[in-house]
Image (cartoon, rainbow, N blue to C red; front, top):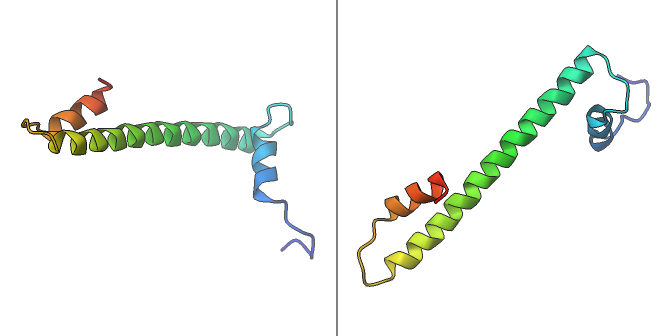
Length: 82
């Protein structure tokens, strides 16, 4: 344990690891780059989810119309960024 000393809050540790001005050892640089890669992947997944939500919403609107539309086509178009 840490002999009764209070642990550094998570947000402060992340700030220190992600701050390029703070000196780091090899492990900390690895953690810094890993955090950046994971944050980028999370952002990509959030963008994909947003596109899917929009496609589902559009599909629901189209399904309520009188013309036949395959919602899978709308989803495919959304995933391709059309």
